[in-house]
Image (cartoon, rainbow, N blue to C red; front, side):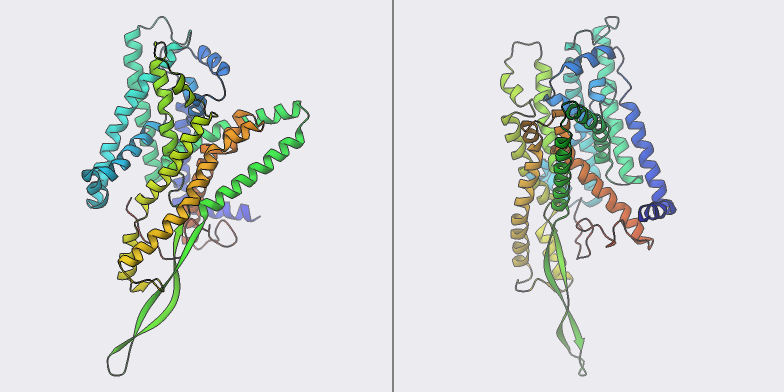
Length: 454
């Protein structure tokens, strides 16, 4: 009954209802685009190639992220991954190049607009490169390209269409973020992942049911549930730093005396970076696949590159784990500035008991963030390589992709962020939250919040 009450409350809020419908409409447009095939491509040949390809190929993972558009040679075959890659490069430049540092920290709204323009231009350049590699891959499939279309026309038209498709996906994501609900880019990736989940689930069930191993299937579901719960706990985990506000009482002589006030706390997330590190790491791991597409048919030895193209190989998982840990620290440093926290507390006449205001407070918060980020980064890395561990224990490789890894983290992280937005609308309108406590803990806490630059 509570579920129906919550749904009724959600639907009764006009702005929230409009935002949800707007988001669903744009996601539907995206899903339709994943089935629109590029001109000159023969779908039957693509289906035959996809069915014969190894399940541990990185291209299969790319296909999961694009909701099947990659194997369909659709206009959205590259999805939003070039945009993600461009965002990675721009954010990393913010650490090394003073110009980008100034745009990120000192230019305010104008700086953010300039960074968005640079990211979009870089997205176009990356899409042109990846689009060329993708078309080379399509041409290498026997019978995939119609002989009736001239070679030059095939390249010229489809490279433009692929670039336009990626830019349109980027535009859809921005519109969802502005006028919809949740992060649009993440929701587009999640939509592609969820579209492939039922097929993998049914395939695993049929496999184990045919082998008379229903009990093993139940055990897999139980482990999957435990992994999801552990992922939620880490994503929502918060370290609370107690703080105290000092207030002053005016005496009879007109003077003032400092007195202690009620305690509050400063919430620091165990995983402040959210799902972005694993998205960033996965985007970089797509580079070997792009290199192989360009090298196909050449005399270049791609043996070592192929090792990083196998999502269940030791080399791939070792590099993937390291990238996730590194990007967790990088993105946390971008999102959390201890100096901003220290200045905010000082302006608010607040302090951490036992710690001097100013630089000492900044160092104290920085040390805590460094310590709590380590277990969060290691956990994200472990979840990232979990599909290969599950596959080694006999889980079907298609279902293993959802058993952990990028797919699970994206689904859980994006779902929590979207639910937090919905809950904020409910609480603003004086409705009960999505859970009994009235708040999704760890996503929007009641402690002191310090705004971070985006």
